[in-house]
Length: 227
Image (cartoon, rainbow, N blue to C red):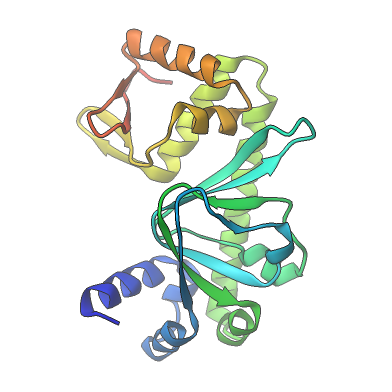
């Protein structure tokens, strides 16, 4: 592994709570058992049947977790960027998750098998405590997503989606909060179960009202007046 890649690997792995508590020796061993795989944009990373076998870490790029409704419409459950991880819940209870994960960009994924997850993490008490904390956070996130979908007003749904994105991928500066995760109008529509046209109309209204701004790099700035 090249030095620059090794530095990135260490940075990402140590940003994950239940990996960060491991010893340097254990982290070094993880580097040998994690499998790196490349997925081009729009490529399916896994479907429901695969979720109980592996845990995934986003090494570069972005992925979306989606679920198809009975009407065939795609609904985004979560978006994961570089350094995020997913799939740990299914490794613990052995049940599949009713979702598909798709690469939003050209993406590199680190894959940890169920066997290695159990060997390196479930036998470590510190790691177990961190895993419990992560599961609690996942539960709170699920509550937030359900809250978004239960709101009757389209404008409120889009606001909550932007707030959720700011919470996960927001950087505060003198202007407000910048959502560093680039989202298309269709992404926001899929997250909020609305049409793209409705989302575009609402975003244009927020811009006109001075609540948000689309920056040159296409990131969304939430101004202090946004609520």
